[in-house]
Length: 257
Ligand code: BTN
Image 1: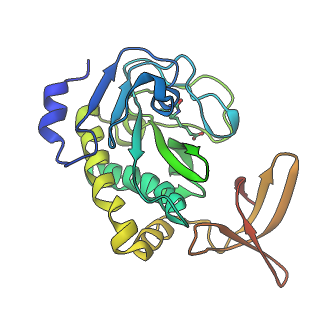
Image 2 (image 1 turned 120 degrees about the vertical axis):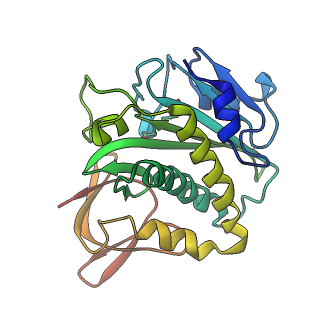
Image 3 (image 1 turned 180 degrees about the horizontal axis):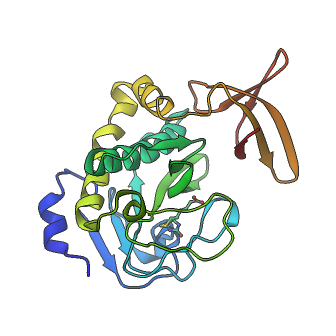
């Protein structure tokens, strides 16, 4: 049961989540908010579903989540300036907001993995899938899909990174309403940093990224590149150092070693 009243009391935003849609079951919250024909057009709309039949992860992976135990939701952003590096910064804002919310509420140590995995003790507790739709060259809609493993205690299947949940890591039952409100409250606050202090987003993100300076491999399709994770540049791309060569990495799965 998701207590909408309790969630509403905890939500402290002006825009994000003020249009809130709660669903029992959908194919994918991202798919719905991306598709204009559903007529969810208000900037800041949040769609939460207890179950997704076609929950999607990055790189066409499936996002598994047991009904009613976790948080699977999407945020719609519209009519904003997504030009230049802004859209990349939305990516960092999203994972940072989820990380900060989990840290604030449960005092857990979060690690962020480029581009936007959220880990505790090397295990994946949340993931983010950002999608957009454009008209001509202009990005019209940006949908931020967030899946957080909250109260699920066992996970079946083959995963690239071992999954965990907040309950597993904190030994307590988690109030999903409180967590969702906290993520949205922080998200709205630090989304403004894109205009006000964009460097703080990258600074706070990098402070939680323990792979910087480590030997890594980056897999993109069937290509694997090796080097040192040198930095994340101002635009949010990973800089891979091999010998004296610095290479900008736009996409890919990063592993240590
Ligand atoms: C990943 O780590 O691969 C990203 C996972 C993103 C999952 C969320 S759950 C809500 C939203 N709807 C989807 O279909 N996917 C995202």
